[in-house]
Each structure stands twice: as C-alpha cells, then as structure tokens.
Image (cartoon, rainbow, N blue to C red; front, side):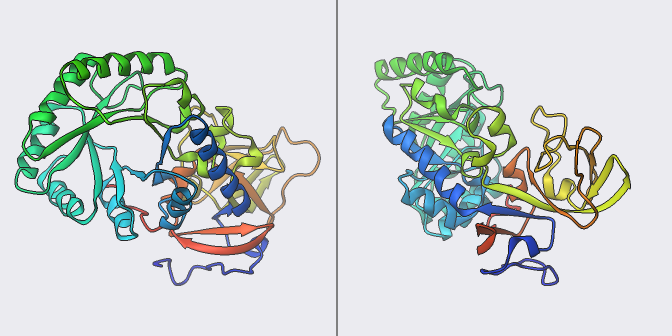
Length: 366
C-alpha cells in the first residue's frame, strides 16, 4: 500500500467509531447483498453481466463480482486495465476511444498479456489509428460505440454504426466483435430500436456481431427491456450512493459506502463545519443542490465544500444537533469519485473493521 505513512490506517478488529477522519467506510454485508442482488437480476434475464470497476478500483472486489457470476470486467482507461490484468483478469473491456502513440503502445502490450481484451471506437479516425498500430501486432477486438440517446460518445445513427463496423471488419489488425452503448435512463425502447436496426443490417451484410453491450448504472434495472443486448455494464451498484437512491435502484439501507467525518467547528447555532471537503466527498452534484445525505440528521444540508472543509446548514434540524468532535456518516452523491480520492478503503461488519484494501487503480485515469 502507498498510504501516507503518517496517516492513521485501520486494522481488522478496530472499531470504526475510533478511526481518524475523513475516511470512506464500506459495509461488508451490504456490499455482498448488492453484488448478489444485481447478479441474480442479470441471471434471471439471461444477460451476461460486466461490472464497471471504476466504482471501486479494487481487484479483490472485482474477484468477488466474478465469483458471483459476472462475465469479465469493464475498465475505463488503459492504466486501470493494466492493474486488473496484473491481478489475473483476462476478459477486460475498455470503454474509451484510445488515441495517440503512447496509449497505443501500452494497449498493444496489454493485448499481448491477456486473452480477452476489447476496446471501443466511434470514428474512422480512431479505427484507422488502431489499425495502423495493430497491423503489426496481435489483432485487437473492437466494438462500435453507439449514441442511443445518452449524448456522450458514439455514432449517431444505425447507418453510421454499420459503416464503422464494416471499416473495422476490413481493417488490418482489427476484429469487429460487437456494438456498445451508454443510454439515458428510461430509453429502453429507443435503445432497442437502434440496436435492432443495426443488427439486422449487419446480418444482411454478412458481418457477425457476437456482443451487444448495454450500460450502465442509471438504467440498471431496465436491462431486461433491451432484448437485443447480450450483456449489461454497471458499476455504482456495488456500493450504491445518493444518486442510486434517487433513481429508485436502492434504499439508503442498501448503500454500502458512507464517508465518516468529524465536526470540527460550530461557528453558529445553525452551522457545522466538518473535516470532509471536496477531497473527501467530491464536488459532483449529479443534479442535487447539496453534497450528500447526513445519516441520523436527515434535515441537515451540506451546502458547500472547499478542499478540506464541508459546511452544513442545521437550520432545518429539530431536536439535537451535532456537536464539535462528533463523528457523522454521510452518503455521498457519487461513490465512484470518492474511491479515487483515497489510497485505501476500510471495510467493516457491525462497526468492527474486517479488512483494509488498497485502491489499486487509484489515480489511473489515462
């Protein structure tokens, strides 16, 4: 582990209530239940499940997901995938357009190391760059990324998807293996229409399409409505967070992560300041107007974050209010970002530390 040697690191048997803060804490039982619940849903609907490990960045947790029945893993960047390849994972999908000689060199080395590496592309420029490099290396498997309404990356129409699939199919050093999309929530019908049209045309053109990869967490329990898909990708479900509660995918009692923080100041009766700022809770709003749910003080509002401080408005709280030195628990808006803010993650059962795992792919965002 590369945790700051001056930091207080938990060990099995420690009480969570005694830990130095700020620190994210993971409930073992909720974690296991989240893994089992989503895998059971995918199994029920005969969908391969490919967890996105950017949520936790911890090989031991990916191993738990695969042991539960997941098919391979989803990474976002090459450096992240390298960590998981070193940990023994073979079936890795990188869902990002990869450009530039430095990245292509690392990608080719990774492709030589494992048997099931796959990437995506949504433009001729990306495909041509991959082909130029991999023409003299082990062939690389490529999926066409489709924008089915999510408004991020992806070709815009089935016609464009078919053309790019053909380009990959004809390219030296590349093998076309499928389609991929990241849809907006509630758009299963539109996704299905886009994919069905594309698959029909690919079949007519004699181009095999073994993988149809749908995603992600916001549309998690709509996966069965996209019948053209062969697999689904999601990440946040393993911990869950405030955004997943809002989406109806879980309850607060199914959130496995909370951030433990300490009240360090009470400048006024209506204001508390905690030791968790943007470097612990993340400034991601995801449509919220504040920065997390304060467990046990549901009317408290985290109104602002600086780097090291969080400011909490207590004006709507009735009854007891948190005092200086008190430790509070916060469900963050977005757990995935919190994972990338800490070197280690502390796990517990019933308030007693069970293990500490290194966030092995922390900071690996290229």
